[in-house]
Picture (cartoon, rainbow, N blue to C red):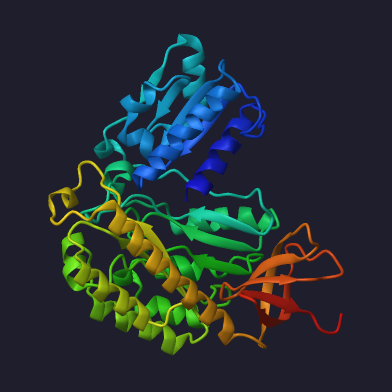
Length: 417
């Protein structure tokens, strides 16, 4: 979603007459769309600010995004920062730049998150193969470890009609795949009284878009209706990303997640039964407050038993103003790291096992890029990364290839060329 918003900010500045240059080049303004989901994300934002200042000490640095919303004073004190724009103001970036140019003083425009009610449309369209379309923002959940509601505000969304118009605009750019993005996209409809399944049905009819992917959806919001629709739709791919966070009920309760492991298992089994070839990825947090050795082992064994395709492992990071800080025991950094390594290894095994299942099958691939070695790279409908030698320009083309698994990679062979 940050990618979609960054591109939208870029378009706004270009429309106002600014010329975009590489972030590694010399610019008058550097715009950093920050994240704050972990302390590591905060650190990367600070590093980007300082790197920009080194490239051009006379430049004005503009920081927007979640880190800007949560830590505006901290950011304003960093040398080179000229503008700090919170959630409510970041899409008014052109107006705020003009105001800054008149005052020539550091400006921090950050409203209380309770005042943020509007939805700002965003989508990416610079790459001709895949676009990101923001369909929802904010979150009404209160998971104990998470600052997103403090950084993004309450759940809100635009109308289905407006999103269809944006999808049509993306299609007019020649893009064939759209990834639906948001903070809690299954909660779509809070602002308009519409439903997520109605959005899927409407987008499925947009001419020119041949593929959609649902970026991430909470297990309690992945309804049977949504699974059935994806199983039979024209353009929605057999691909789900379902956050688990932990495979232990005791920790899930501490996290204030809205499901237990029994519910999650049944959801995975439902996807497997209706869409056997589906790629299923999920998020898992390691080292969260209260995660004992016993609880971690329960979580590991549960994840191993699911037969999914991939685990996005991330390490718990203490966040200010979250209830998780009150939970005991505290997990040492070295233990968090060891658990992360163990789960990464499990994820890699699951990923490779998933790839091996499709060795010898013929599947459609949307080719996106070409490597220095002359191989085109793209993804199957069920999100297998494929490399193929193709004797013509295959970029942005969907081509059926025979999959051949070798040494941890999937290659594609085109017959009858």
